[in-house]
Amino acid sequence: MRISNSWAPLITGIAADVATLTSRDYGNAVYNAAKFDIPKDWNAKAVAIAFWGTDAADEAVTAILWGRMRTNGPIIKLWAGAVTLGTLKVITDPITKAAVHATEALWADTITLTANVEGLADAVIRNESVGNDIAFLFINLYGIVDLYMEITTINTATTINAIICGITDASIEWQLQAVPAS
Image (cartoon, rainbow, N blue to C red; front, side, top):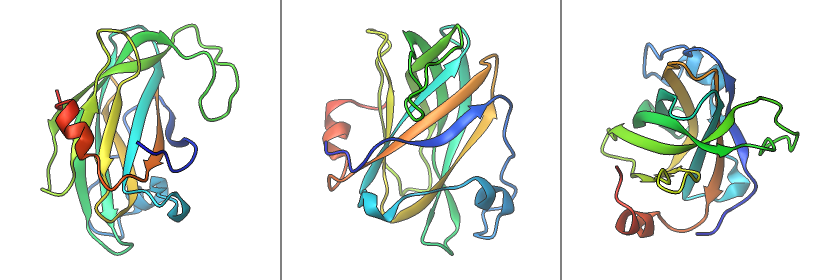
C-alpha cells in the first residue's frame, strides 16, 4: 500500500449527531458545508480512514460515509456502519501533533459494515479488536471527488474524530482478499 500524502482531518471533535442529508442533489447545503474535498495532488485511487474518540472502551457511534462523483454528481452512500472505541490510547493528536489531554482518548479497534450500497464503492474493513490496535476503513474511490461523514448516532462516546489519507495503488483488492469485511 502506498500512502499518497499525510493524514488529514475528515471530521473533528463531533460531540452530537450531525445534520442528516435531506436530499442527494449536488446542491445539498449540508453536504457542501462540511464536505471533504479529496486533494488532487494525492492522486488517490482509494482512501484509508481511521477513527478515534474520547470516552471508555467499547463505546460506539454509527455513521454513514457519503461521496460524490465529479462536482455536479449526485450524492451516493459509500458505507454505513458502526465504529467502536478500543483500549489503545491516543497520546498525540494525529493531525495537530498536540498532546491529547482527555483522560480517555482511544483509537477505534472495530468498524462494522451495515450497508455498502449504490453498487459503486468497495468498503473493506481491517479490524484489530483482538490486539486492541487501530481499525481502518478502506474505500475505492472510482472517481469520487469529495466525501461527507454523517454521524447518525453518537451513543455515549463524548467526541468522535476521523482521519483520512489517500492510497495511490490502483485499487484495494489486495485488502479484499486478505481481510473480509466483518
